[in-house]
Image (tube, rainbow, N blue to C red; front, side, top):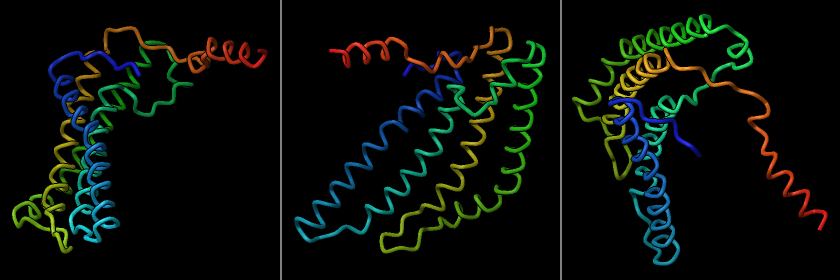
Amino acid sequence: MLEHERTGPVDKITWAFSRIAMILPAIIVTIMIYEIVMRYLFVKPTLWVNELSLWLGGMIYLLAGIYAMQQRSHIRIFIVYDLAPRWLRKTFDVLSVLFFLVFVFAVIWGGFGEAWAKLMRWERFGTAWDPPIPATMKPLILITLVVLSIQSVSNLVYDWNHNPESHDVVDDLDIDADIEKLKDERL
């Protein structure tokens, strides 16, 4: 996979977050293997692996969203976007960022009190291991939304004077691989 170029300080921060998100699944797999070995080989199951994997999985989800925004891999209806003239594409871009910022503001406005309360009382998960998942994940969601909004504005500013990417059905085809496959089938 080719990554979109890093275009400024916001992208560098996002890139760092993405590398954390790419390492965390390996950590989840490792602790799950540890749980399997402890449970079935030594008959000593752990109390903490399930909750830690949930906690890390939530973090992966949030960090991957930031990376997707930096890579411009969010959903866009290209069939309409590609047919539009450049000025209308810029209008679409501004409107989508504006609507996203309104959404982020509304979620932070509505969720800040709860996130702050969970953080201040260090709310825990309520299981035997009892990790502080609510106390950390609720504020992390709001922090992620702030970073996402900064990244979306950064993308808009950077992309403003650059030529837009074209999206064609041919881009999805790997003609060379198809030709090689046909050659192999003939032999």
